[in-house]
Image (cartoon, rainbow, N blue to C red; front, side, top):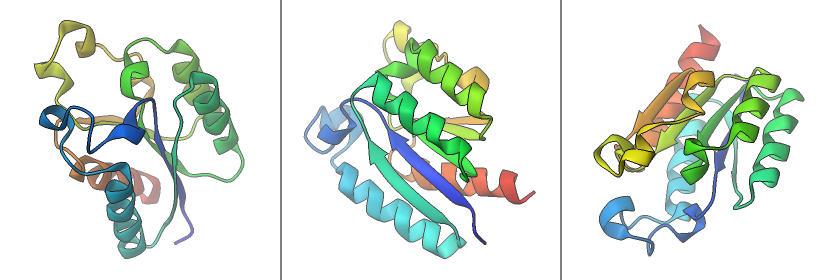
Length: 146
């Protein structure tokens, strides 16, 4: 298959492995990238893997999905809770999106219980650690392939 999926990571995810390992685990973003790329190869799709700290940079990458991309796996980090700009970009491009969080946001502080991204996503995976990215990729491909 020729599906092209962007795996996009938001602020502070570049610090995985050393940032609050009791919450986010010890795997680095590079470790997660290797997992996702191996799973994509097994599933027969193409992935690009990106991380940006800036909201505008994330919006720019999401807007670029309108040009030949089939889906988005997004870990928006803290932007999940308040970035209407990211929400609007996802809605504008109309590309199926799965929101991913490494930690169980519903078992954490109350402000993390609400996502402004979730209503424009086809699904949300939270609390399963790095395997959540792989599950998101599989779910997204199943939806795209029908």
